[in-house]
Length: 94
Image 1 (cartoon, one colour):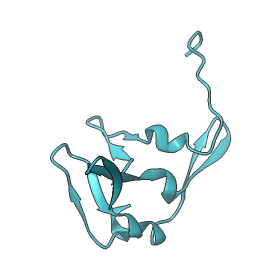
Image 2: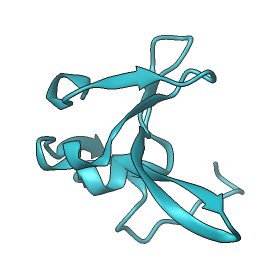
Image 3: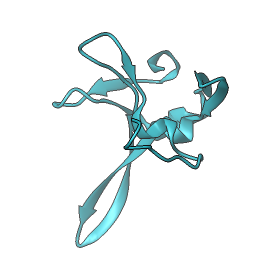
């Protein structure tokens, strides 16, 4: 994902942060879930960072990449894969 960014950095907690305008350069990607292809769009995996100033919340112009490789070399998509879809979790059958 970062190859399409004009620049990025890693925050102190290890998250990848880039200019939100990079979303115009980024592509959707697809994952196969139970025989169905799910589209993950840039708007879903780039999360706008906000700050509060003078009691008003504002966008910073920076976005966090909501996809990360875990310590076990697996990729975790998290809620980025749920945006735009009706989802439910069966706690009984996991």
